[in-house]
Length: 623
Image 1 (cartoon, rainbow, N blue to C red):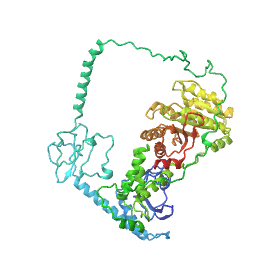
Image 2 (cartoon, one colour):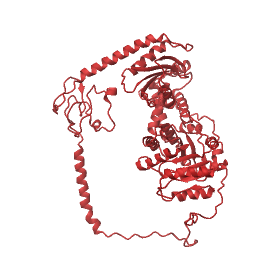
Image 3 (cartoon, helix red, strand yellow):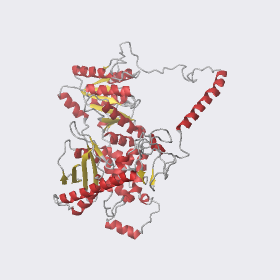
Image 4 (cartoon, rainbow, N blue to C red):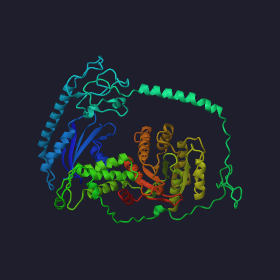
């Protein structure tokens, strides 16, 4: 049963509605999380309602020429196969009666009821046709390998539905018969981990197993034989040869230099962890407070050859092409957009954007442009370029305030410290950039305290202690092999007693698949409830950025002990000065997490921290 169907303009004006408003506002969640985030190329949006409410599935369609959006909502437990057909029919009929100045369409009720009846009837007829043509095998009977399938023109996979065994690898067959080799929508989904999907027989009229089918057992036998040969063949030679003695490497001594030089430049520290008095590091104004000027000159790149990349297409004469550009009545189709989008996807991937993200962006732009009329004297490539530029600006622009200084003063008025937790994988520069953030806060007359909660890595406490000495700010530490969640909690209590405004919590680097360390991080965040959880990531990564952020958020949600789990709030992008124009990691991270880039590390000194210039990033990505 269809819960709600809504027709509204891209500006937000509701023209026609079926059904009542649902709890939790699933359509608002669709607009906020999918349509505005350039995920409109997805097939459906699954809305998880609050406790006590039903979960919904939303599907949508666009009329780009008229600027209309059609959204259908139904309960997720129901598999309504006619929704796509109904949306297409509703779009077709409503476009005929639509007038730009008209705001009420009460007469469309009867038309929609008729369209819904026809769509349901077609879906029932298709379901009966599929059930009649399937003819499943009787349970308990084994199929003969050489037996031909009954009914002409039907194909089946090697794990045929109802068969007792799969002939190729011994696993139970999970596939189903399909007519003409096509899939059956929701009824015929195959799990990614299923081994049966790798042994599907294509183009076979009967169910006999292939002669050249891959056999896993043979491969295992070959591997075991090869391992035995290597073990027996190489053992005698190694035993006969005596191991050469290792020669210790000596420092090179030049003629005009002393023989020994001091290589350890760290400050001497006594048993209590106290070193000599260090003058506070003053390296000037932080780059966070400097405005970066971006040239507004257009690149003026010529992409005319992109439109001619499609092979086999007949080129238009110059007169017809000019007439069409003047008239401006050409309706854009997917075939027209495909060459320009392919070139744009390749360009994004060369800028280090993850392949999956680049493909989704291009699909979303194609969905937003399909059906639109091309303007006068406008090329397809420039239209696609403009649409992609608007999409990138919309994605990278923060959806909430990222003014940390204002939030710090708000927390100070409430009589509590502002807590920031730095998380990320190993070796991305969490401690170094934490010190840069501390230096920036100190320039704004804010009292900062560091919390050494990396109790796992050797030297982590000493590294943070060195930064605290140079910046002359307090540090709370408990040594190693302590519970980081307890250390952070005690640090926050100490900050309240000392009237510190901000507590910067350093955590151990951990890979996204490390279950024990991810559980400890989840405990630290849930116990202390920080104001900001910053994910520190490298600008050098491409596809791995998607995996890191997705799994970090997934682990924090799965391992959380509270209903509303805390996820990543912002991103600190490090080593940005090493990537030249390969700035795609920023786009990949923001797209997959929805969190804004709040800081960018661009050097090794305390001042090398700045804001992300969104216009400059978009210009670089499309250059």
